[in-house]
Length: 412
Image (tube, rainbow, N blue to C red; front, side, top):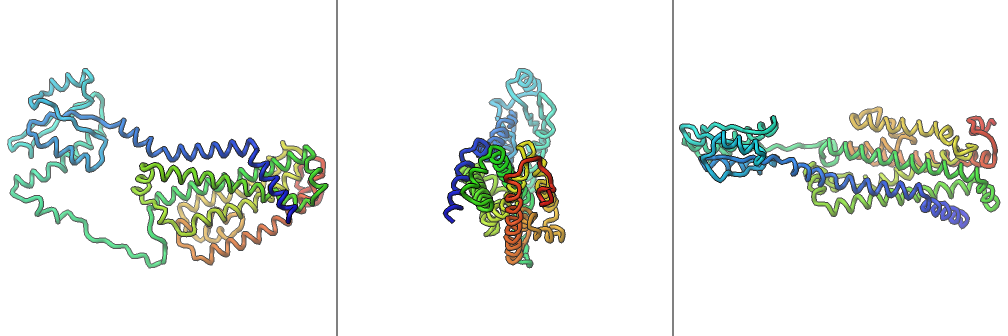
């Protein structure tokens, strides 16, 4: 046990000091910060793209009612009342041509005043979105005035527009309903994150073993330990570094979420709240990362021992990389059909479990015994993979020569 701890600390220290680990961690944190600041940037761009419309309103009633309606709907249009109510279309066109205003809205009262007024929107360029926004807001703002002129109290008809009481009962025992679009986007992000994390750390394991074999460092290490213990120490050390990386990115995202009110407002408005996630989602995400890395990491390490040079690493990792791509593809397919029988059955296949079972957990209702059974199957698969990988590692670590699958399977 002490020997394993020494090997684990050595591998962890080497990983934390490696340029690849530092670079990927730095890029990941910066990317997480950039994604967290994206809502604020979009909000700033939206404010910058707000159209300012000068309003010539002789009635004195339409402009404030229209401004209140636009503020309620959140439309990117800002109204500025003109100082004079005697503005003509020619005068406003002159302001528009000299770039003193972006657009204008000219109100011409009708025989009944504001209720049947006509409106002219003047802009320097064709802006159908602004025209549609103002037209819809005007229609809404004029309703109370037209009701009053017809002798109808707007407050008396307001109950007619109240939406009916509507309750949804879920009888399947599922989790609290969430916005499908937001939940799917969140699962997609986590699936990509899990895929990249496992693949990246497994590739680091592969390159590390191949480099140590080429530089003869592994021969020195085998003087004091066995290949099996060396393999276990490597997998545990790189896996711990991967957990540190995942934890650092999660902490960066959590800090940005807590510090940015705009991000929290966007998430709440979209229907995404941490309290709505299944209780075990985050711990299970960590568990699926661990089992996924041990499944693939041990195999990558064994294949790295079978490679003669670092240049052969791509050929050596072709088969497990293909399996990971298949798992990733099924997970993307499962975003559209998470409750299908194909995804349900495939989620119990250990090489596919980290992605598919986590996807099912968030998007559908999964009984506890299913994800517990999937994890037990993964543990059994890890035991088999570790034993097989140790045999490959022992046979090939000191072997010279080019990579071949016959050497991997013990026939070379």
